[in-house]
Image 1 (cartoon, helix red, strand yellow):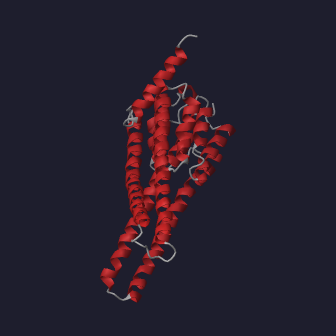
Image 2 (cartoon, helix red, strand yellow; image 1 turned 120 degrees about the horizontal axis):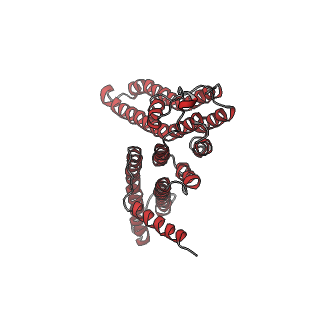
Image 3 (cartoon, rainbow, N blue to C red; image 1 turned 135 degrees about the horizontal axis):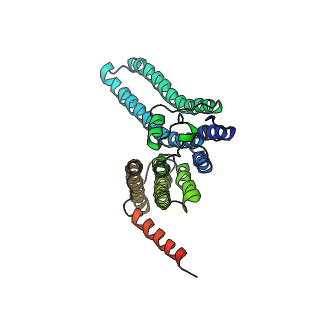
Length: 312
């Protein structure tokens, strides 16, 4: 019998891969495709899960690569005056090529991120079994996906690892500002009643990411408040009147608001690392729980489950 993917299989695969072009907003489409195609087509399910991994893990790698390039370039540009003397013309001559290299490298990373899902979509449209570099083969082994098996030897993907992959990608998507919450939210809506594990992981991930988003907004609000207060205190002349008690109070409040926003900005990367660690632990087979949030969500789920099972 023919193992070639059907038209429906290819459509879901193409849509899932192309959803990466939405830059975070399309992360729910691979989960929807996987939910619709699991136990129907291993090909479509695998491609959807692979596309989900690319949007989550791939975005993380893209962000980290860009940050590394920015940091290295900044260090080099700051070090240039120390090696070229005080002449501004010499500094500009040395810095200009580095700025060009920086622009080319960042643009190349950006283009590569969007090029790979387009290639994947074209390959799937042609019925090919596309694999993303590094991740594709690892995911196939993780799910025990083997398209070469004959129909009579056919087995479905490992269900527990499917759920763990979806839950893990929900954790990893914390770097996708705001839109990353669509991954755990969609997983919870579609499979929350079928899998206790996926329900718990999705809800605690959603709560955790919502908290990080609130911190983002809080830091931005505090910084904006401090900036506006600075304008009020200094005025349009740019010379603060320190003899005014109200202005002295304003300066103290300004310093406090900027300090709070600075502390929040330093805390957020640590929370991102915690989200990445949670995703890794889930993929490794652990039933990971965020500090404090995990216990609260567990109690909430247990309480609601008891209410639902209680006879009328």
